[in-house]
Length: 186
Image 1 (cartoon, helix red, strand yellow):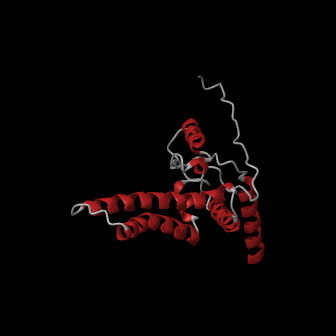
Image 2 (cartoon, one colour):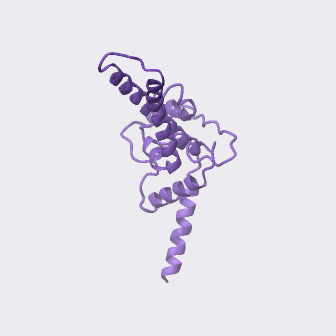
Image 3 (cartoon, rainbow, N blue to C red):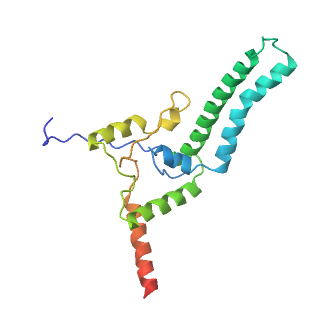
């Protein structure tokens, strides 16, 4: 393909949700940073459920495994529980980015973070060493991946500018805030 040819840009489909879309492909760090205390609690409870059930079953109906046998079962149970708890925590947080669950707090955090980046003249979604084409590939591969997190865990670790939202709202808000700051300083 030559430099003159342009690849067609197909925008991401916008889901019909009750709450506003914040980001259809949020970076892993943002999902973890925007998580609520209840997400941590739910994930922790699910992580502890498996090992707790194994201990309960061992008390109710002992397995009589050889010495050290139950310890390996508990290690495996803890590992699987921790993985399941993390995925549940992550999905609870990412669904708010998609607008599937109530996300007023996250919308305000997103606006504050992005407006601050605009004021500092930084790229909204971070810098990337990838070409624009590869950023698009990464975006298309992980867009809405949180919906199918229970099938295949897939996270976005790539900074790119394809997030399914109109970024002009951040610039407009930054202009309003800067104008208010200038008017207040006079």
